[in-house]
View 1: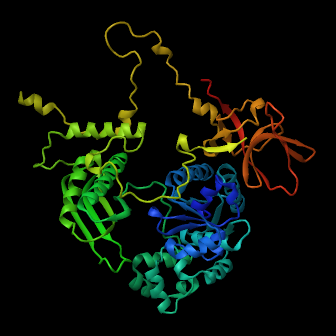
View 2: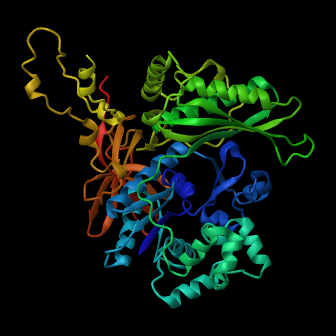
View 3: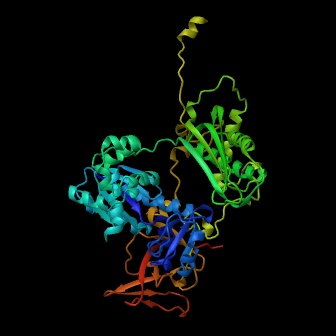
Length: 418
Length: 150
């Protein structure tokens, strides 16, 4: 059996741990740049604030109901996630950390699913203050279904899908759009054929599913029928690509400002890459304008460049990204977002040197990068950076409602009156 | 000359960064002179964090503000090490939530009734007797107080 532990309203719950006054109150967390609603407490869901909704659309509801609003605080959520995952790993040897707030666990060999599930829920809540739900079933996809059901229809936040009759009645309640891996496009397509619930979906002919939804769709269908097709991935593979992108906090039109943002993203990518001990074969740059603004016109620029030899050198990657940016930049647009992707990552000890690429400076560059990483880790992010990243960085995102980094910064520790 | 070359084998090693990091540098260095007689007795560093933090997943650092716990050794701006995983015992110092607000007090329990006792130098700080009308919860147990003496 597979168990899925999922933190309830994770970002909202993290904020609540340090703000007891917000217990039973409506609160929401906004995406990067304070754009959209990305987490809601149950109370915010109840008053009708939608997931993913732009915050300006929810403004009336927020004001009327006195909803507390937070910007994303990934330092806090990351630290709380680490605590939750560490506790779950201690209780279950085979664990796949699937996202910041979800983990699949292998429950085979466990005698009493309910007891272990309840213990997980209690220990995580006691240690961290974060409530979790646990769904237990034969396959990963069904464990997702069980978890979805546990959150909505149980008091103890735990549900075990262990009989055919339970499975068939729960699948009837599950809209196809909520099935793990079925995106909104597939959901629309299925709806147009009259397939509304997960139980409609499993009745479809396998050949039809394969044709319409590829092998991934067929796997989903078989998993829902109780046939394991997606195994537990307990050793996270090396990342294939790394992406850093951000929306701007202000309107950006000039190349110089874009260049600062692209340099910063590229430098950040290079830093992440070195942390993974990998080297990338290519770098891509994206810039785009606001797709919702009809007045300004829409432009979306994207270009990729290959390195002669895979690299993780900040200056190589920043240099390439800047060249790409110059070739896709168009004057007269108001840019909303920029991003850098590096990809085709291979372990740095497996690089084959290109015969034309004899870089005398490679050893020096490597030690320089190590030194920069060391300083930034010891003293703080961006203590040393490349000049082209800019100093003022006025384009940086808005996080006006940022809560303190209670668990990761000395100056931000929780203060309590006594 | 050529036969000598043939005898030699060339082996490529893939160097893992991890193994390099594990190399230890001797404290006294390897320069000329006598090695330090203490090298044989090198022990692990005393790790204060490990001493103070028994449950890393449940431990939070909190700054105390105010004077209601001076007699208990907690001064304004002291750093409290708080363990959320511990069940409070009688006479523990706890971080509690009282009607939605944090407070630090001595936890006293006798015959089922709970009192949060203030321990200030003056009597200006009232105790809080927990009644049914008070929303109350222990957030964590204060295991250590770090005080800066300068």
